[in-house]
Image (cartoon, rainbow, N blue to C red; front, side, top):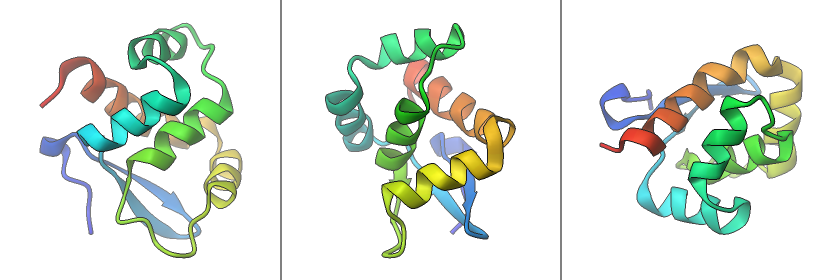
Length: 102
């Protein structure tokens, strides 16, 4: 499955596999329940104060069709291994979706 930019989706490579992150209503509600208000999350990201646990939590909730091998720990380790440079474009897409909606 490939990410559909029109839907506000983004792709993230984890263990060599492209995961589609889809910021659906259900995914964002789950992320907000865990991480707090999404607007505050966007503000922290804009200020460079987004914690790795928050980034991993948002991505975790937005993974569409989560494969059985994927755990939060695997996702977190992939974020660390790939670095912020790889995660930032994905975060930008998700934050854009939060702010603008589709």
